[in-house]
Length: 574
Image (tube, rainbow, N blue to C red; front, side, top):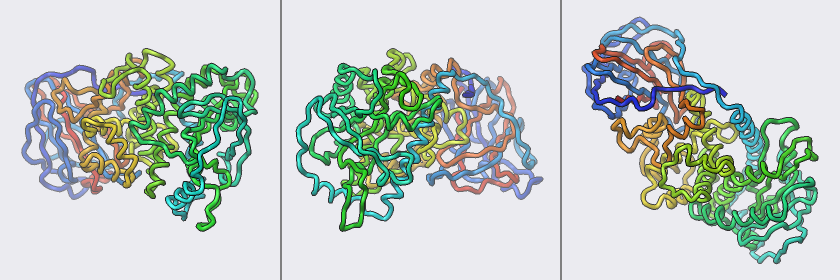
């Protein structure tokens, strides 16, 4: 995995800067654009530039002292996956500059090779995401046209009978849908599973076909104990109570080789498990003509089982590796289970994938904090999360790797992208956007913020706006500037930073000592793109007594950018 460096850390010196905006519109590729009078910015000030005529001529005035600037060109539209292409040029001088068509310039970046172990870990995440995308598509097709709220109500009325008591050693039967089939509802296998641990909130069961030399009795007991003591109460605090369709008061954790078979032989990555929303609905509702015989009509998640000898399909999974992986998987899938149960019980629409996945990745972190004893207000550094390698791998590493995937190419991914269902970079950015929003808008009871996100009833960006009570165009600049690293020393407002993470320290530590955000050094001339909700980063370092410098954001043909979400955020960092 390739990573990129950015402006040097800690370069913060008092200074001043001025910015000029265009007054006249450029007509064609050979027409000069005339810039207006300069405007002054103090150190740490962030200025937003909006509108094609303003964006096509931004002049940074000369300064007597050395200075450094961060420029972010962005697409602030809130519609998913709107791609806008434009050209950015930066040259010494001010005033009229002749527009030139289409030459693509090279980015001046610092390159650093990623760790091979992280690359393999990324492959694992990608494989799991693709499997989830296929399963989600099949489920949505099955539910198309049905009133999911009515189905859920019918199921509660029919199943509101307390489940029979179970004990360790009992054998239960479950239906496991084929996650690779076009319809999981009708393509399933009856699986017999033995009860291995009975917790207050968790029922741990293992498929009788599980490979030999797997979990011990002590392992199963520890799984139930951590769920009861940490995972469940933390998830309830932050996202709400799960439904209890079958009346047993527990979530079933089914370890089955059916999950092992989802990973192709010889893969670097693996699928760790999943929650399937149809399990929260009845097998049939005759009044609606609905049928899904594979439903277990209860809260359940399906998890990878150890296979140290590769009995299932040649892939070896040690007890240690599965124990480590399943901890984060359970936290992640429980948020999905809670979210879906609450929304369908209220008749609300299913949450969009980017926000649903972002909350599940946030759940991993929140459970990790609870395990480590870190308060939600603690600003985490890399050494904090690396203290215990098992906890790091289970709860923190995935989010940081995904966020790094976005940082290395922010022009190709967005936190509000539908591609979050199947790609890593959007998921990492979604987690970071939610983390930022929670830091800035969560107030004194941040758990109320996340619980309100779950309830909705809004979905997508509208849900985030309803909870933050500000528009997405106000949230985005704060997030994009905060993603550039810790900025408290630059005199920036607290609006432009994460309070829960020392993000530059965490991402630099993950990336072998180099901050991975992709930066293009000015001067340059480059044609690039921004997805809605994302942007591109540029850095300008100026010596003392430097002259003015002009930056232009234009369409590819040299005319002013015409898309409504076009923005530039200019920051004086020293």
